[in-house]
Length: 295
Ligand code: UTP
Image (tube, rainbow, N blue to C red; front, side, top):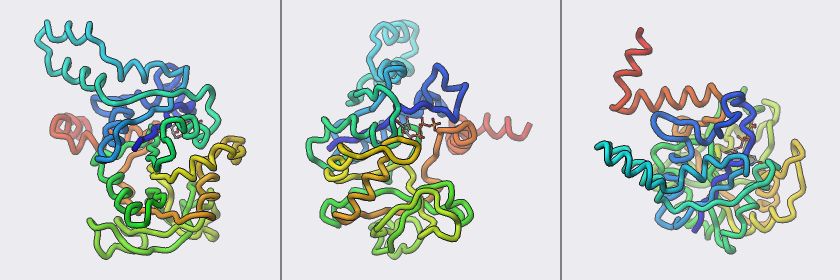
């Protein structure tokens, strides 16, 4: 089974910071955002490879995941084995690349990796969204397995007055994952049967307050539907549009996660918040972080 990581977007909301450094390469603490995503993508036992959809203008991502024996040797000769090991590890993960020649939307980026999925279900992980504890994908797989291999998306609850910023699901709660028995409604661990998705609804019109957060486990049918998916909002090929078409044909589920379980690093504010939360929780950085905040 494959994990697809779209990472070919323009990163407009983080300019000028992303003019020459892709947003997926910005470090969170001591490693780039995309390394967290790759580690998470490879966590489920069923996943044997992850495919990064990159852009020809972002060669740094492929460089990062390539061994650099010269640098490794130099570091070792200087007694810096810990750093040599860290870069060797980044160059050894089972990652391959395909390229989206121009950013034509998330659905188009996923479609660029269709050659790799060979008619099997696949995960999609947005390349700028970090989930440090890596528990979401295995739970999504559990939900899919319980429903005959159905598609499952991760969703989180937003305040009712913020629904107009997101893609909101319609549907009803139908159960819970094993780690959260009895969870229902908007609670972490609840499972919903999804019947539709509404982009940026007005507060009064929203069918729920659960929004898609950037983790998907999709059936092969979604990839088939993407192949002839027409451009939608923003004249881009939208993954949501293909998912909504799939919902008319087959069962589709959502797993509710805690909104604080994942971090969107695609804007300066989100990236700063991600660094702050992870620094405060990491024994290597917590003291320096607290001292800086209290100064
Ligand atoms: P975003 O919409 O957050 O990324 O897509 P973006 O388009 O780079 O952001 P802005 O609006 O310009 O600031 C989520 C993920 O999907 C990838 C992005 O790289 C990001 O990791 N993506 C998006 C693609 O790979 N191709 C696309 O055409 C669009």
